[in-house]
Image 1 (cartoon, rainbow, N blue to C red):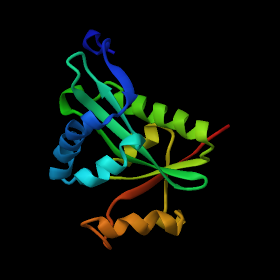
Image 2 (tube, helix red, strand yellow):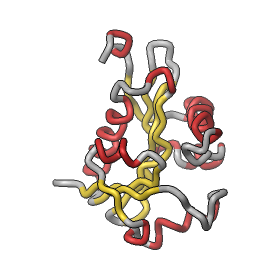
Image 3 (tube, rainbow, N blue to C red):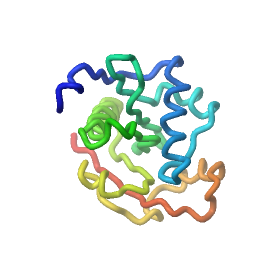
Image 4 (cartoon, helix red, strand yellow):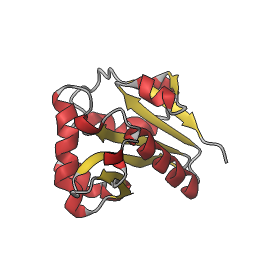
Length: 160
């Protein structure tokens, strides 16, 4: 990474990060690259989030690991601020989330994405959405695109 990235810190998110996380996600949601997250969703799911902050304590990247069933979890809201993209921060968050998943016994991680190529570079494989457990779809009712989901499903089977 370039020198400007040497002071970046990855950590679990805290309540005071919510506004910055929501603004970061909203940037991509406006361009139809990601689903928006309501304030309520972020408050309820704050323990799922990981952030990367710069030396000014600005959140420049985020991602969440949402457990959907006994052995499967979803990567959600993975975003990196435009001026920090293409420097491995998304991969850094994915790595962190994989370690977290392994610690708690998750066997598979999936994502619904508009950027399958990024996930493939992280070891995920494109799968048919129908291969995902029905439990995964319970939150889709909240989605503005329901029932016409145009995201691509990707999955990573975790090794022990």
